[in-house]
Image (tube, protein in one colour):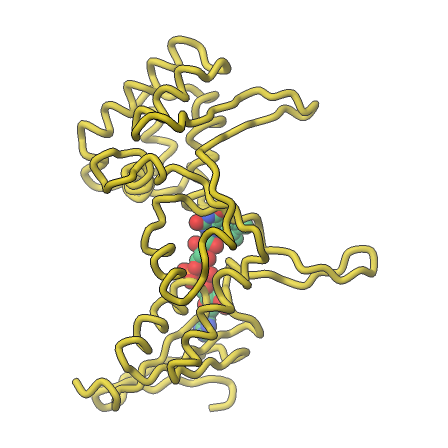
Length: 266
Ligand SMILES: Cc1cc2nc3c(=O)[nH]c(=O)nc-3n(C[C@H](O)[C@H](O)[C@H](O)COP(=O)(O)OP(=O)(O)OC[C@H]3O[C@@H](n4cnc5c(N)ncnc54)[C@H](O)[C@@H]3O)c2cc1C
């Protein structure tokens, strides 16, 4: 394949499309990103909203990254984003409050221990759980670790957790927030296989060195678009890529040894 003569269309300017475009322009491909909306970033973007006649920039939902997102962090580093400037890195901490703001669950990982002991000791110190819930959670962690964070086939995470005797409190306070943060999918339909991958990357000491940092939360200090979409777009354009906004791809057909795409403009 002659790379410089190959024109690659990337459909969608969300994190996935922009990451693909960054990798392609780096290799020397001619790239055009087609984004249906007037803005890049997809679900991870900053939007302008009106609030009491005041225009405000808000993220399209709070995003939290995990220390285990090593490919994402490596990509951001490559395009010149300084992790320390754009994220506040804090050890894993989940606090749930009742409607009256009373803390009903609090789990904090322990900084001085390696993974997964940092989270296990955090669980033991967690006063909100009964002894039987604590034992069930530890048994579950040991079971999935023994099975190398893999299952045969796949099933909904909720079903998997119930099968492994996780009480409704454990599910609601611990597993569901982790699942929502990492997969942004309700546990009733979230893939157990993907969730176990997240747990492996975040809590398994065998995954890679420095692993207690894998379960850290990375909280954006800036608007999401300033951290992800804008720097990626800048990198793509600086390396010769083209970005077309408000261009939904309406059809895709095989033509010769390539493809033909259609937008509203033809
Ligand atoms: C409220 C909320 C909170 C979240 N919280 C977290 C979190 O804490 N941590 C975390 O890791 N993840 C979180 N996520 C998930 C994360 O935002 C997504 O996983 C990620 O942004 C998906 O990127 P993507 O590129 O795969 O898809 P998308 O972001 O959906 O991008 C797809 C893009 O393709 C464009 N497109 C679609 N069809 C066409 C077409 N025919 N032609 C041209 N363009 C097209 C769309 O307009 C869109 O811009 C959250 C998501 C939401 C909504």
